[in-house]
Length: 236
DNA sequence: CGGCCTGTTTCCAA
DNA sequence: CTTGGAAACAGGCC
Image 1 (cartoon, helix red, strand yellow):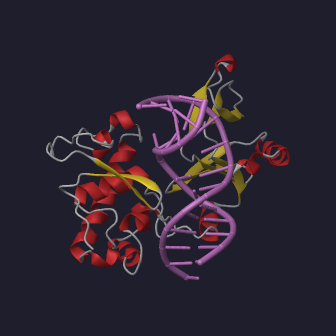
Image 2: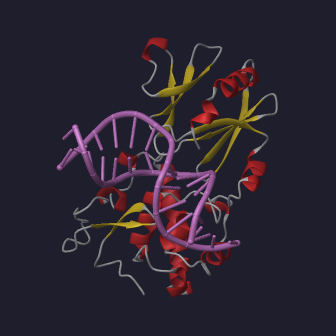
């Protein structure tokens, strides 16, 4: 997860492998994206905090913060944009071996409720830390964790051992629901359902369902976290 | 201007 | 083995 992935040697090799290739299919687990090349390799992209892909046709309008461009025969381009440079671009043998090698869990949507419960049970850390740990299952990021914890009324610092099976099951259902809806909205913040906590996720903001309990900001596992205090009470 | 924040992951020390 | 904290980075906002 650093700039070494963009060393001159790495870029040269990448270019060699990409030239003349077609993309044949794509795959994804969690936040890890893969595009298959007609030569059998897979191009792996991770967008970090600030990365995205953007299609453009006019070279003079190259998007800002572009770090990597794929040119197509028809004159179109795809830009890998990455303002904060936390993204990754690299060739890998295939998504599943990458997943295993890097100790990553399966995609959340391919994780059963039982597997979800087992992954959280026994963890001696705040439930939010466990949710963000991509080796259990992949796909839950910071705002999604806050979203599902709000929905289920669970305080992010509560330890999984203090939660009932019922609560953990609710958490699983909320996770699946939030991820599905986020995908439906193309993960575009402005397109999220109006009731989404993400729309109000800011210190001192007022959620319409909790007008007397302004949103509180705290740090959990080093990540900024936002809760509605009257709804999310820590269980010690 | 300084200091702190941010849709993430990995690495290292305890 | 697990866990917590810092680092990698650039720009926006007090």
